[in-house]
Image (cartoon, rainbow over all chains, first blue to last red; front, side, top):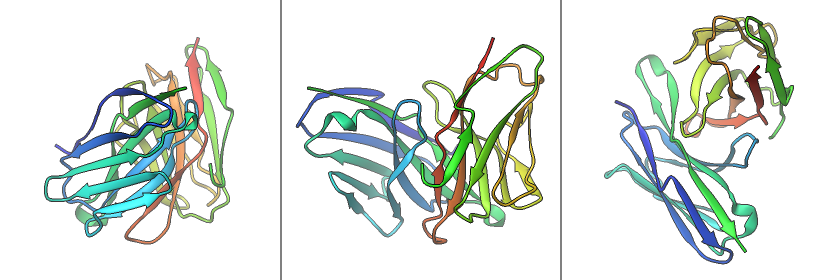
Length: 115
Length: 114
């Protein structure tokens, strides 16, 4: 079954600290993996996208890693800010029979950054 | 929210009513999608359209209907047959290269059944 599991479900950190969010997936065949940031009551916004051949990608203070062999990804946030408080969603894209491309969404990790 | 608008932001529906959620994009994207988001769950695909005048059911299409008469517009109707419609609805469109195939999301519509 194609699934994306994220951990932890929620996380509280102090402003200025680093944190790492985890994503494990069983989607096959694999096309790419994305991390989205979703503020409360808003639509998700893309942070990074990685294909099979990429094992790390950065976007400012956000760094995503991908291990396609173990089917794991992580999102590392450096020097957290209050504005980082949001849900972070891991999404895996698979290309299935007939060229149909489908996104499988994780349930997200809710991050709260406290002053 | 990158060129995709959804309206209204909040919508209230009475039992037995049909309601229509609007989604418009000015990104010149061919493909558009509707997702439903419930607390503690990943987004689930309702309907998608790869081209004008064509659309396909997603994983949870029952109780919903769509149309795609224009490239820019992909409205979603939540019918009275949808028994649990209270949720956050997200529209997306797809662009970018074949490898990345990125979807861009609108700001969402929160639907509540009274």
